[in-house]
Length: 209
Image (cartoon, rainbow, N blue to C red; front, side, top):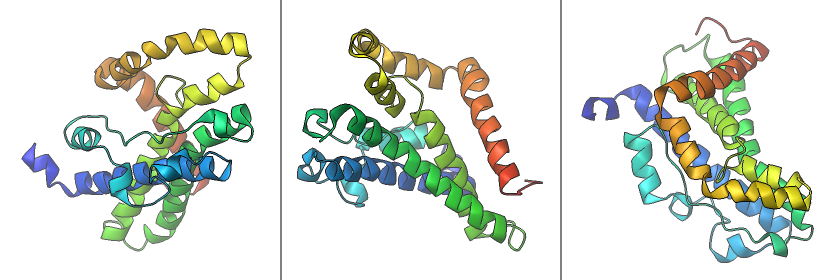
């Protein structure tokens, strides 16, 4: 484990995860604030200060487990000017911020990589693109407490939303099994990630990695 912690690839991934999580939660907070809910602002979350967003246990899990998290951004949907559509926008803001980071990193990487295949900047951009792409995809899974579940719940008719929310209690357990059980992770999460990654690399003209 100590050897893996000092592995350069691990350090690049760790930096990418930290940056991705902080910007993800910041995007939630800013969007809610703009749309009328000041809950996150009062909680001190409309900031890029990592200390405001990172969760100690989630940070430890990033180091020693295949999953990690930041502190959820507090949002009061009833305070949004348009609660249902506003909640969709707030929920999507986090994953979209990760997608934007991924696109920026891979765009710059496509320029830097031919010049510096193993340099610090190339590695940082590569892992920034990969990690944030994973965060984008992962957070859109419609399982509580991920953002995808908020999006689906807000788009459903009220009666179906109530039935859907009854599954929230089981969401964290289902998600944990999906992440920690290798067959589920390898045959569900990774194929989706690899498919989207292959598509993005093709779009950016990156090959031979």
